[in-house]
Image 1 (cartoon, one colour):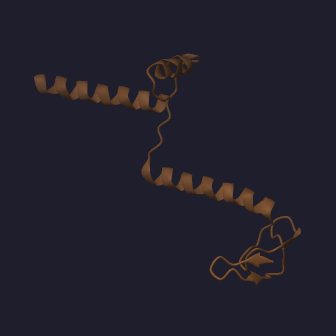
Image 2 (image 1 turned 45 degrees about the vertical axis):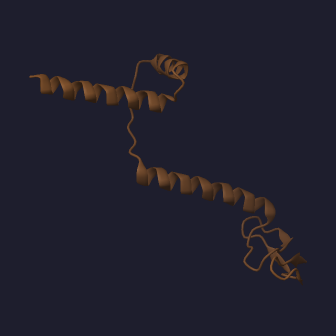
Length: 107
């Protein structure tokens, strides 16, 4: 039996059958549809989906190709500068855009 937080009374929700694996388990709430092991697995998936949805809504993805081994050079240099590769590349692009804009104004 599960204890409710508000009243502290024991409530028997009965047993349930997991929708994923079919195992019978004691329910902790009326809405529980997965056993403890499957619930952990689905929670991880849901967190991952939510993070992916947020990234897709707030960021654009750019793919670049470099010669074999050059990715390691960039990663090592970014690490030496104390940043991630993504931050290092974004800073390099920002610096180049600023340089290009200032050169344009000189003409």
